[in-house]
Image 1 (cartoon, rainbow, N blue to C red):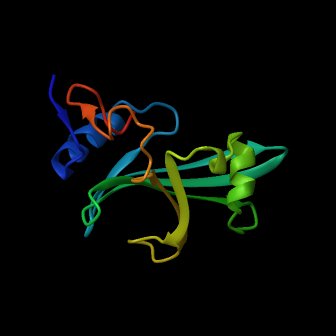
Image 2: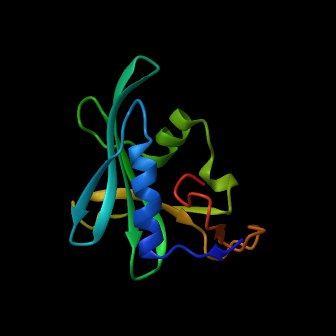
Length: 140
């Protein structure tokens, strides 16, 4: 069994498989100046509120990592705060040292988006950030 870190070639292979197997709120692949992204847009309901969820997987060539860019919007177009998003998802990001969530400027849209990625300082990953070649890195 060969274990690899995420290369751009592997990202493209795994994100393509991920997008092609998506059901329901499907993921679509897009080519950008920054590489291939998988994009999803969905409308959902939470506590009688209509919410627009935008998500994109992006491979960061400079930092050699997978990033999930996302933003949730209220019906009136107001971006939601991370604590509001965490409530919808039923999670507490501060309780998970394995991931980092930060507000940054989206690389292609040029507007504020949240970015989620694996914490490079987290030593709790028994595989050290490596995923066996036969597994899908994106799905994991």
